[in-house]
Image (cartoon, rainbow, N blue to C red; front, side, top):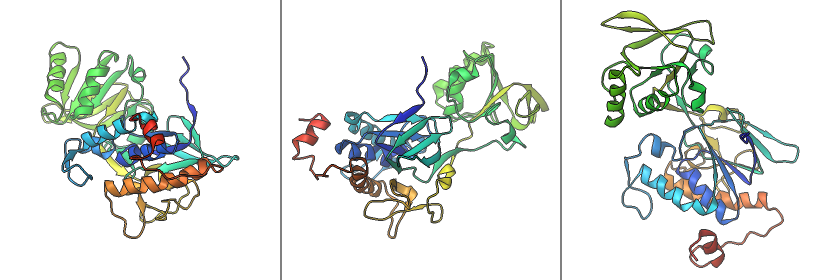
Length: 344
């Protein structure tokens, strides 16, 4: 089966955090379909990646709610509108087609076309923190990776996984059956991952199904971009070479504006200026909502992003349906909206 890589929709949302998810709801009430792109492997943005269990106290009607609960509730709320998610991908390029529609291309070649783009990328893209290894960039994409997009890519590889958190342990367990051999490298024999995952990893080590090395990464061997081994060092063994052809490094994430900086938009201190009527950027048809935008008096609050999403959707409707009249309705009294939501 050929995997689809070209899509067309009403609105492309870059960022699947809380504000991007609520934008799906506001757009859906106006019969606008949305595709969402996010570099993370699941919706929720910072709420699920950085503080899933952290309590949030300023979401209206919720005296206390965790980041994961907020995400779960938003996902439930947008179910009637069946959004399409393109996860584990970064919006890399934006261009305007001859018909006036926008086309977004991701870093793995997915293209999505729509009259409207909504940038809801929080503080920007989550970018991987890289190991402090000289010339590591020369091996990226061929021998060095920071995420798993397709598990098959690691079949029969002599694989080193570096890190000590949930991502490193989860992928150690998931890729061990596929890879030729897996070596987990961590700087200390203490892990931040779920205890069950750590126990399963240690069982596999004891059974000889994989290797655990307590050491620091020091360098890459081999002619770039092909890796032949990793130079590691430890107090016990000094420097040594681990034979491998592939490395997955999970050292956490940091926030950067990323490719959005190259979209041709006016910027203000790494934020995107917008008007306060529609939250439109310097380019017609491209909007920015949530922490990524800037305007006088801006407050970086989730609830502010929700408000921005509602006003953005009104103008997005006019771009998608230029010949239709926009009729404002309340969900409490409109039988049409209640039918869309499946509550009538």
